[in-house]
Every structure is written in structure tokens, then in C-alpha cells.
Image (cartoon, rainbow, N blue to C red; front, top):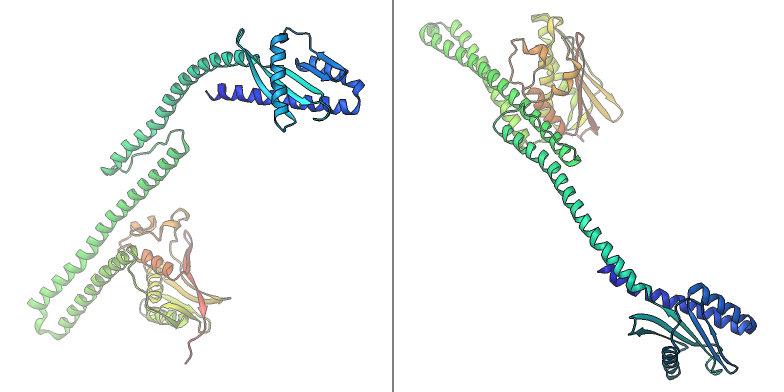
Amino acid sequence: MLQNFFTTNYYEQMKVQETQRTAKLLVDEYSRDPSGFGRLAQSASSTSDIFIRVDTDNGTEVYDSGSYFKPSNIAYDFETSTAKNQLESNSVDSVSLIAKDKKNDTRRLVYATYLDGRSSGSMLYIVAPLYPVQSTIVILQRQLKYISLIALCISFVLAMVIATRLSQPIKDITKSAIELSKGNYNVKFKGGMFTETKELAKTLNTASYEMQKTDSYQRDLIANVSHDLKTPLTMIKSYAEMINDISGDNPEKRRQHLNVIITETDRLNKLVTDMLSASRLQSNTLELHKETFDLVGVAEDIANTYLLLNEQEGYHVHFNKCKPTYVYGDKEKIKQVISNFASNAFKYGGDSKYMEISVKRSGKNVRVDVIDHGDGIAADELSHVWDRYYRTSANRTRDIEGSGLGLAICKGILVLHNADYGVDSKVGEGSDFWFEMETVRPPKV
């Protein structure tokens, strides 16, 4: 419909504009060189297949292309007189009208203008045929019917193919998601050939892997915590019974048995505290009580608690420090981080029994390193040591107490302080757990 409408109107407008340009050239040529006007008129008539008539004081001149298009004298006289009357009755310089021949259902453009100004009375008439329009429209209509039918068939086939290829990966992903919801973490998501479904499948595969890993960690946690809780509870119960049955009247034995109960109670308290801290970090409810404090002094206090082991158990504890350096943060939480690093250094330090705590200042930052000479951590496991419940493969075979939450808690605390942190380790050479904080000015006394 648009093609039919625009073809007719566009063709007529272009024909009017072309006729106007031809008329302007003829008028300009007549004003400039009347002797050359005839040659230009004849050339324009032959080239554009138009009929030109000129009425002057000297008579009438007619130029045509000699083609089969030639309006009859009666029709021609009527159309030109009509155009002349419209031109003379209005204050315009030119007039164009569309004439229709009822006998053969053809149309033509009749254009009239003054040849040498209104006062001269000389008139230029141009008659241009519009007969190709109807035949062109009929041809286009027939073509468009076939083209539309073919396009609809092709579109239907393409729509079915694309819909099938798009819907099939979504169906597969849905089936896999149902399996995942049932606890089958080994399911694989396939995204097909589309970028969006590929990205969705990739994301779901990652989520499945993380869920599987978390589930494995949680099972390990339950096993570890159950073991760690069972042991002190058993010890507490046993020594309480011993106090009740045997050592109640013996002050020395009673004191020893009570110390065991206190120690085991402390272990239980630490397990519960770690689990509570991990829960608060996960729910973003952990509160920080920030203040300005000397990080070197905090690290030194922790190092002093381990220096006694140098003599008692043959450990080699070294503390390297710089001058007092102040940071802004939660003093107790940072102390917890350093203590956890130091505790891990003793747990996993191996037979070397070596630990070093170092505090160094570099520019505007201060760095704390806790170094051991233990078995070290494999390169492919370094990125996982900060995960909850995770234990490296070298330490899973050891009977080492702990919930697997310590480093995850340290990570959460350091993130809340906007501190950089990390671990450098090589298998067989030991590990270096470290963090950096920005220094601040000492508080005013």
C-alpha cells in the first residue's frame, strides 16, 4: 500500500519538478538568445518525451519528440486554454494541472508559464505524459503479492528454527536447574549457540560449583566441630566425675582437674565465638569500635605471649619491629587477626618450630607479616585459604583442632578496615600471612 501510494505521488511530484526545470531553462534561453531557443526546445522535447508549444506575437511554434504521445488538437486546445485562464486569473508566474483522458484512461501534466514576463503576453506550454504510472503500479502490486507470500513463508520457517534453537537450551537449563534444586551438584548447564543462554549456563555452572564447594565445606565443618565439641565435652565430663569421685578431697589433684576443665571450656568458648563472628560477618552485623592505636605495640603484645615457648617447648619466636606506628581501626579485631595468623603459624609450622612476627613501615602504610617454615601451601590452593571451612590438602590429614573459620574471619575484619592482605607461600618452605594498613598521626596527649 505504501509502495502504491508513494509511487504515484512521488512520480507526479518529480515530473512537475522536472517540467519546471525544463521551463526555466527555456525561459532563460529565450531571454538570452531567442535564436537558440528553438534548438533547445526541440532537444528538450526529444530527450524528455514532452510536447512544447510557444505562443508569441509572431505566431505559434510546436515542438514534439515524434513519439506516439501527441495530444489531440481538441484536448490540447482545451487543456492549454484552461491552464492559460488559471495563469491569467491568478498572480502567479506558472500553473500546472493534471489532465485525464477518459477514452484511454491516461493522464498528463500540463504546465504553463510566461515566456518573457507577464506584460509580454508570450506563453510557454509544456505537456508531459504520466502514462507509465498505472502500468508500474500494476506490476508492483503483482510483484509485492508474490514477494509478500514468499517472505511470509521464509519468516515462518526462520521463526520456527530460531524459536526451537532458543527454547531448547532454556528447556535444558530448566531441567538442570530442577536437578540442582534436588541437591544434584554434578549437573551441567548447557547454553546452546546464543550468547545470552551461554552466559546464563556459565553463571549457573559457577553457582553449582560454589554450592557444591560450600556443601562440602559445611560437611567438613560439621565433622570438625562435632569432633572438636565432643572431645572437650568428654574431657569436662570425665574430669568433673573424677573430682566428684576421687580428687574432691585432694587439693593438688582437684586443682589439676579443674585446670583441664577450664582449658576445655576455653576451647568450647573459642569455637562458639568463631562461629558467631563468622555469622555476623556474613550478615554484615559485625560492629567495629575504631580508635587510633599503636599497631607495633599490639603486635609486640601478641609476640610476647609466644616468647615463653622459646624456653618451654623449644620454639624459635622472633619479633622484628619498627618505631611506634599508629593506625585507625578496631584494636581488638586487629589483635584477633594477628593472633589468628600466629596461632596458625604454630599449628602448621611443622618440625622447624619457627615463627616470625614482623612490623615494617613503608611510606604511608605499615605491614604486618607472620612467617613460618612449615610445609607451605600449594599454588592452586592459595586463593581458597580465605574461604570458610577450607583446609589445605597438606593439613587435612593432620589431627589439628579448629573450625576452619579463622582465616575467613580475618578476611572479613581486614575487608571492613579497607586493608590489603594476602599470603605468600611455597611448598616445603613455609608461608607468610600479611596485611597492610594506612598510617595516621599519633593521638594528641
